[in-house]
Length: 112
Length: 115
Image 1: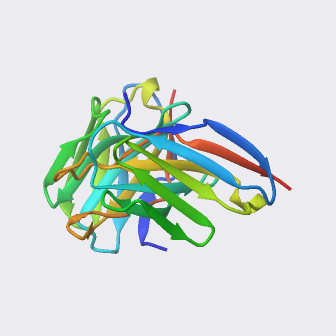
Image 2 (image 1 turned 180 degrees about the vertical axis):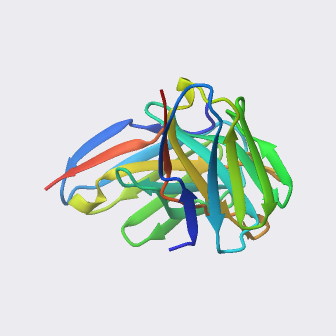
């Protein structure tokens, strides 16, 4: 079974609305990362949050991390059609882990 | 954009033939990874490397081998390809950030079809 699991699997919203995606994981971690993938392309890094951080912002992105619940959320505010993509969370496995494992992703569709 | 090149980008081969995918980086990053992406499974780690000649297994390493003889090149080999290895393969590179593995930079992917 995979370390990270995103929820929901798919999300469809209108332009201007906010989109929230969640990620749950199983083991302790050093950091958690979010990535975006446009159809047919490689993944692009969005944001990294460390285990001792609770919230981080980058432009229209807001990421929270709750290590007690082993969960994270990614909020995209004022969404645009160009935000349509799949979003993945990735975690290491804590300690000196050098492996980064991904969830199955959330497919976001923003309708104009 | 991070300097990562995957080759070939597309390949069709037959069951039982050997296949090698190449990942080349110009960033001098320490860590290199091979993932496969399949519908319903997201990205799964096959193998990774933490230095020249230093590699380790990921979640789905059976049927795959890797080699890293130079910092810039990480090769993924399917010794005898099977239809279950039809997938899109992504290479990624990373370096340490505050002593821990940081963000990954991905290549554009190699689409492999095994008939």
